[in-house]
Length: 335
Image 1 (cartoon, rainbow, N blue to C red):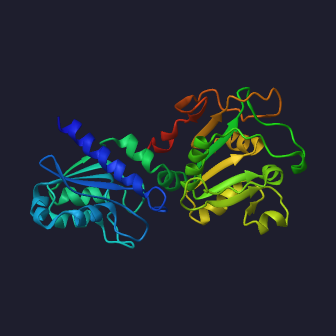
Image 2: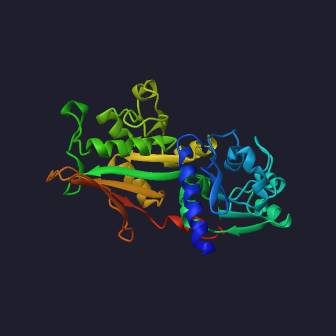
């Protein structure tokens, strides 16, 4: 019964954490819920780097008349409370000072300055600590952060739109031959712009830039526009438009790593997407499948046969496939 109840409250903590999706990076999204006698008496999430962490926000939300209940309360946190001094004090020590009866942690923090230390601090103080409730969901929530910490590269999402017969565009040799085929619906465009807002950088290849002159912004969703990148040799037009140009994938990833960019969305074209697929440099992929039939054109990227759609979202007659690899391969050795 305790396990089932823990999952219910951790689900609420996950919901809260997602409020920081567009603002918390480079810090991970984290949510916290304080429960006493099956009643929420406090909750919070991490808003942005440099501001109080989720645990502190949850304690601050507790009403004055309920503060005495903390000694008999449980705090649910999606990520292990921090144990180091950074821009904010250690949350693990704050939890000890508040005298919580029990702490439930979704997943251990992969950050080298935490990595189990927060849990150890709380247990040494006599607090009952349960670890691993909805672990997979909590890891998914902070996938960008975990990938950057463990793989030493940004989390990479691939996205493309294709016709019903497997083409991403008609054949064009110059921008004078007209606009690219538009597969997206109004609803699916909102989803794509949400993806853009949730990533810190976005990439297209030289040919896509020259043929399509893409804006790559979040005009249909909100949030911050990602840093715009182009792969290959481009002229002054790209630089004047605010794009960052990179000679190849390795130089791109090296630069993003140095700049602490944790997430990259690759939108095209076909050759650029295929390069990432063949080098196994991707963590998540969205393929938008349209009902339009082209009969010929630029073929869509070819995914490894081992990976199957994990999720399907329908937008009228069209739908998006979420092609997810064994994403947790990044976390195999991470307990």
